[in-house]
Amino acid sequence: MGEVAESAEFRRPPPRTHFVLVHGLGGGAWCWYKLRVLMESSGYCVSCIDLKSSGIDPTNADSVLCFDDYNKPLMDLMASLPETEQVILVGHSAGGLSLTQAMREFVGKIRAAVFVTATMLRSGFCTDQDVKDGVPDLSEFGDDVYDVSFGLGFDKPPTSAVLKKEFQRKIIYQMSPHEDSTLAAMLLKPGPMLALQTARFAEENGVIDKVPRVFIKAVHDNVLRLEQQEAMIRKWPPAETYTLECDHSPFFSATFLLYGLLVKIAATF
Image (cartoon, rainbow, N blue to C red; front, side, top):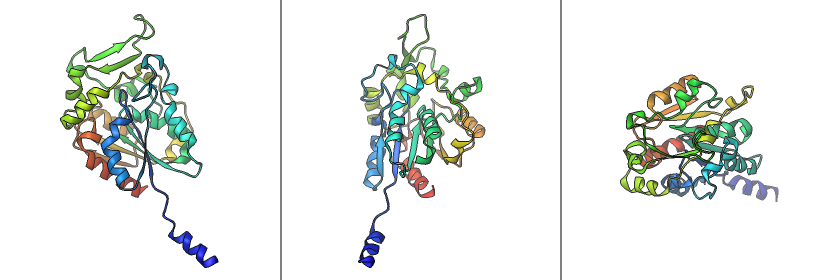
């Protein structure tokens, strides 16, 4: 009987690698649909979440005023995982801030954190340099590229924003298939901009550095410029850095290449 049990144990397949994919401001779980098909077809476990007010979450973005509230869906997912399970977190754009918060509280549950042309700031927006490195500067496209809302009143800062439809393709998806940019134009929602600005994280005595980080640069990104990406990499060097010749949305414009890098990262860490 012991030999039979031992043989059965030997044949038991290893646990599937679990990826958790986190979208950027205004996006949603839908952003990852092409990548999810590839990954699940290859046997990976994939979770795509909607942060508060994003995707199919019905919350009004103007009512989300702090980052902890905005990022709660990710934190709840991480808390629900068994203590023995480790995931690979993948964050796009502003989703990098969501990863950073999760890394501070769930270090033992994260195999690696992958920043896909994402905001990678150890302490969030604490200094003017952090803002310069991590906040999009779209001034070259004009002064009126956003539709903004003032949920706290017109005498207060805007609470949410979304790129106007006429700018979305040229700024976010200029190298992506037209079918995908058309889909995105139908699904993009205002993001809780004021909540994102409150993303500031206290010191954590080096715990966060126990999680291996990978940064994937997008050379032709019009949202988070290449020089901004490289500035954040210099300031907080990751374990690995990769480069894609793509726009701000590699899940559309470089789907197979991004998939290949994620598979490589899963094998490495």
